[in-house]
Amino acid sequence: MVLVVLLMVGAAYYFGRSSVSPQSNNTVNTAKAETKSDAPCTRTTRLDNAPQYDRALSLLHQKLDGWNPNNDPSENYFPPANLINCIKVIEGGVKGTTGAEGFFEVNSKDIKQDYYPVTVDESYSYADDLLNALILLHEITHVQQFIDSKNGKDELSCIDKEVEAFYASWKLIGIMHSEEWKSITLRLENDEDLHPQLQTVSAIKDKTLENFETDRQMCLYGSGKNDASCIDNNRKSEIREMLSQDDFYKEQCSI
Image (cartoon, rainbow, N blue to C red):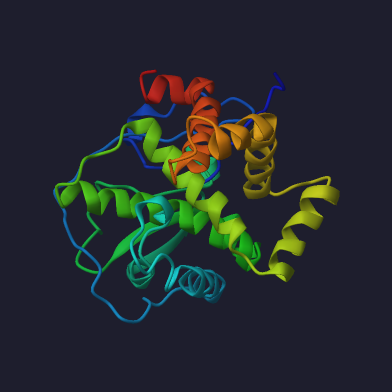
């Protein structure tokens, strides 16, 4: 099996400030917490954010608005577009203090009606809109998970929360326009100093290609031929395997 290293960027359903572990060269640490806040998004316009993040949020809204209008469970990859209107992006020295690229802190006293703060490393102030969209979608997925848990929906396991967030960013790549896709693929193929967000994309891409033909045959002609979510479930299993092999997630998620 090809060894694939997944760089844990944006990986922060922020599980408690005190549980940050020593960081390996390929892992971003996160921590554990809880809150009683419950505030679904009712805004119709976006919160004020710095231009570089407002552009990325606008891009996300463009991609997610109208996605899956029939609420087909097999295509329910993303949080609802209107949640983007309630996201406040905070910059901080995240890498230096937590080792992470960004996080959503579920016990934050700043969470309130129509206001969900997510924090990203200050280096993202100089990233382009596509990279900012990737990290923000990851964190917004965690915001939606938080809302779901407060609304009584079955809560995902620790590892499955991360799988869902990474998969949302992966699927976002798949619905980008051709010129946006060219920008990403050119960097994946030629950039010798690949941004952490694209290192993650590259790692997931390599991992999914390992069993591509086997998965295709199974989902088209085998045991998964009647399962509309067959391919997605296989991809999520591959991401889960990657996360489960990471020392940090083994400890944080008790696996």
